[in-house]
Picture 1 (cartoon, helix red, strand yellow):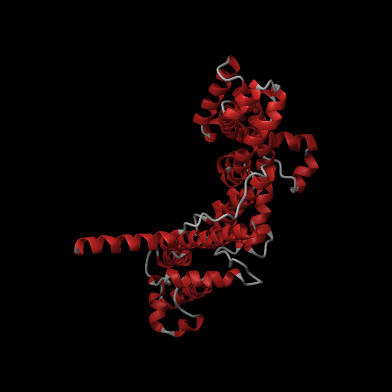
Picture 2 (tube, rainbow, N blue to C red):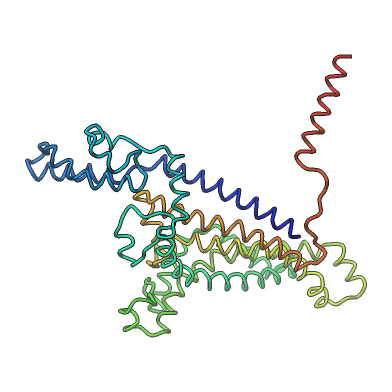
Length: 395
């Protein structure tokens, strides 16, 4: 078991490195230097102000360019050092240069282990100033807690209701109740959240007077005006939208698992022995559906946590979507990479936890046994086969 876990951790780490490498290169290649854009905008504005579209003198251009050049060097966007500014050629051509993506990736790896600024710094200094943050992880986790307020209750509610309805639908397969559940599932699978959200907003506003606004529990202004009940009520609509969107997945998955187990040989044999339905459910059905359900629950929650952008935008939730909205327009590669590392690592390592939990849910499952047939063995067999073919051809 220990050997198996170590192997899975090794493969997970390798997968994480590959994904991070590919994402970093993709973002770096297709994003521009934001400080060059600032420089070009400043030159245009300065020229318009000085002589209604005329050229700005070179000294003024260099004064504008120098701090932006230094920021580009600090963020490893151009292949220069700060002292290279004294070179006249660099002064005139730095905006056309771009650091090699592989070299820049190496600098980013080095920044990961920087105690003062892990994951580097954002291009826009105001991002930290607005949230009173000092590092990218600190900045990101100031937003993620608001996403948890919405996503965690949504996950618990949708999982409990979805599994319960799926069990009943599986046991009552072909009945009117099963048909109703199937229709409900199809409707909410087909409807995207950006269609459900306006309907929920209109319903809550008309019948409950709840405005489409997320009340912030850390806002002094909101705390002084609204009660605890009003806070919870303002969180209900976005939670409801996520529940409706994810409920159908849990229902259909659980229903299919129930039907598979109920039609299996060991359940049919148990029925012929006169074992009651309740005992069959707890002894055979629940035990066997818990394993695939365990494999779905944790990954589905990570998907909810990282994918509720539409809901957070509709209700102006200061969650993860806010952080990423600030990152993508300006190509904030360090913010994007932190999000990539966080959710990729969560996905990979939770899959290991799920695999290990199988042995707890069903002691019959064992890990660590070797089939004796691996990739190297396959290569050896293929090589021997090719030699045999060659000998036959020679004969």
